[in-house]
Length: 179
Image 1 (tube, rainbow, N blue to C red):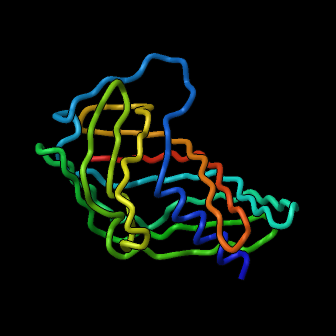
Image 2 (cartoon, rainbow, N blue to C red):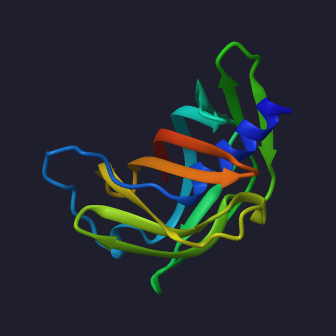
């Protein structure tokens, strides 16, 4: 039960909020014209630390996740909107546990996007419409090859309270999109 709860927390928090890394290198500057069109989601790697604090006691566990068998297509439109279709498997491993695989059958959401100072903020990332959250998720642009590849990094730290316990996730996420 606790593993399932950690998985649900992990998935919802990594999709809810993220912020760019602390990299001091100059940002890669792109425009919306650079990304308009359809991209294949070919990679998503996540490293996370999950914590549960209850009655003054804290339990922490690392988790890693990656995608396989992705047919997800993300389409960025000229008007600042985006949408996705397709299926992807998310494989998650927690400390001392077997890998859990979750299938997302209807893309990873739809919404709006903006590009500012080397950050691509995407609102509406919400597979299977589970969280109902549409807040923008900012990603730093790690690499961009026009009409070839776009690599994004995000870091997230999020906590939520439930029934007197505090659940926290600290994660690093890399997303790879290819044409």
